[in-house]
Image 1: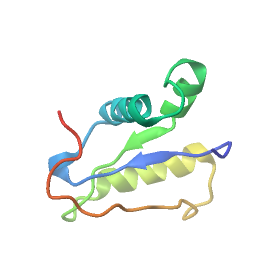
Image 2: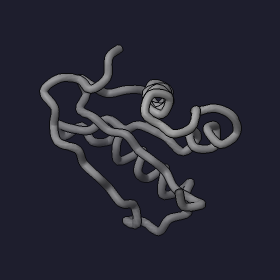
Image 3: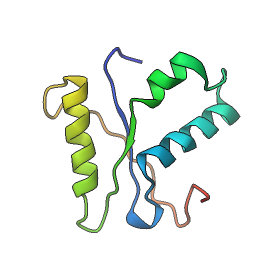
Length: 96
């Protein structure tokens, strides 16, 4: 990963997570699919760069806020963030 980066998860309101829930989801995915265990200083440093912002139906303020905070924390110039959007799913990819 680059030295300064942020990973922002996003989903519509019905599937939204808190940042802590998103970090736990990422930890579980790394545990299940990763090549190394999500633990120690390396994991803590990675998890600190994860956040979540709800999106959809004109209610994108949480996502916009997460992006703005990521730009501040990563010292990126405004608009420099890259985005990736997955296909819309009919059911939640996360179980609560």
